[in-house]
Structures are given as structure tokens and as C-alpha cells.
Length: 90
Image (cartoon, rainbow, N blue to C red; front, side):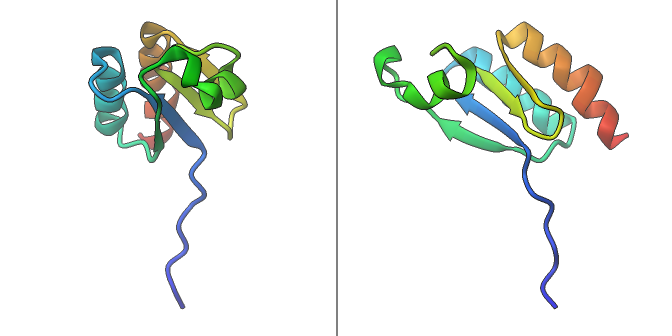
């Protein structure tokens, strides 16, 4: 029987080279959170997937489906990773 992998419920919308997005990636890695990254277009006008997920086009955006949370602004996301997601793996 093949191993069962948990359904990924955390998604990060990020822009390659964005220092704020890199900070969130590092925090998720340090907290040992399993997540999926959706890389977005450099042009704001092309970030329709981010707009659908969060109502705005800026990144980073974190979506935690399990807890029903969608958030932007890197400081808020970093705090959420530390206080909520990291807690779940301790």
C-alpha cells in the first residue's frame, strides 16, 4: 500500500525575488510547515489568481484552508506562522 500523504492545506502566493516572500518561505521552512507555493506574475495586473484568493494583488499571501484563513502583509503572515502554524507542529 502506498504511503498516505496529508492534503496540503497551506498555500503561499509569492513572487520570485521578493524579499518579503522569501522571509515567509524561510519562516514556513523553519516551522516545518508543509505548504505549496504558487509563483505569481511580476505585473500586478496579471495576478488574477492572487486577486481571487485574497481580494487584492499584492504578495505574499498565505491561505490556510484548514483554518479558513487568508492573509496578506508579510508581518501579519510571519506572526501567523509563528503563533499558529508552528504551534501545530510542536
